[in-house]
Image 1 (cartoon, rainbow, N blue to C red):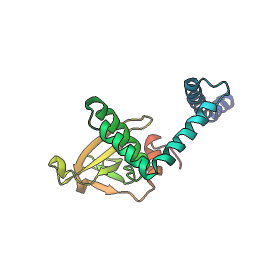
Image 2: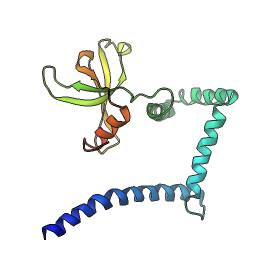
Image 3: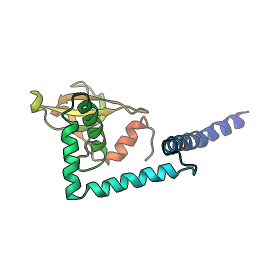
Image 4: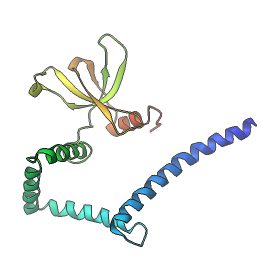
Length: 180
């Protein structure tokens, strides 16, 4: 009976991540294909990827950059649209592009004099614009979630890590169990 239980759990370790990943990919493909109403599975996904690449190529042109800048200025001036647009733009910019924000992994001492620490990413070195010049903004991602908390701490409570930021993010999101 112990052997059967062991095989069962080993099977779960193999199947659950595999099936969950395949399911998420399947749902994404189906949703995107549903938007375009293609009969060939995956064609909507391919069209979406090609469209994104084409927009990236076109927007790298000087004239298109002016148009993108104009749209950006318009969207950042509209009351409700500004809040949504800038939040999404900043989130995407945090992971890709020239302004990557999650590239400075740190250990943060949560309580001075304590050995309790959290792993996060410095998102802003100085907060003088908020009247907190001696403070640093640190984002603490949550494990198994697409959320996190922004904390403001004195600079002396922040210790830079020399690890790769992608590895640190994977470590945090996995709840510290990733082996990569």
